[in-house]
Image (cartoon, rainbow, N blue to C red; front, side):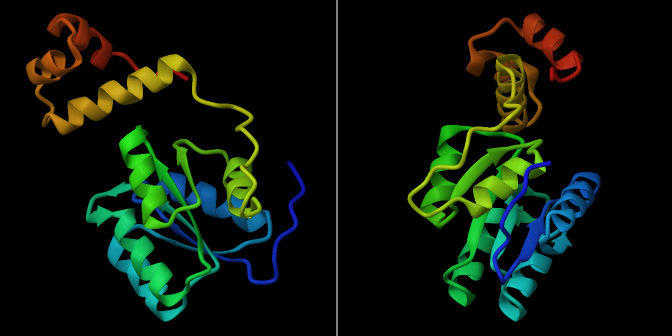
Length: 181
């Protein structure tokens, strides 16, 4: 585990609808010195942002009840110095640009390592965080992209295959496999 210098105000909001991931990340960041509030809905996160705005936030991009970007606006209206990191299981350039335009300081693909999250949160303003120790493999990035398009096409295999310029049966074989590491 890497040593980090945690600032005096070390309050942190975690928003993720994946309860096991949220619990693991919350526990890991608590062990690293943060005071963590972990929630699973956009509504709960907005309430915390209004009532007790944290110094840091780690927000999932896509949730069952909305979008983590909606929480960024509320956080920054109640605490302009809040450093926000966006997490997503469906990383792409368009959502990364949207996150940064909304005020996030970084954008990480899930599953994000706790040390990578801390590095991104504590990076100096004009300094890029160090690259991740265990980045996703090219196979995993490809699989994530296919899953995202499949989801956006309403789980329609034929439409997804058409948009990816891929044979439908090839796509079906890919979808039937487990996610690569």
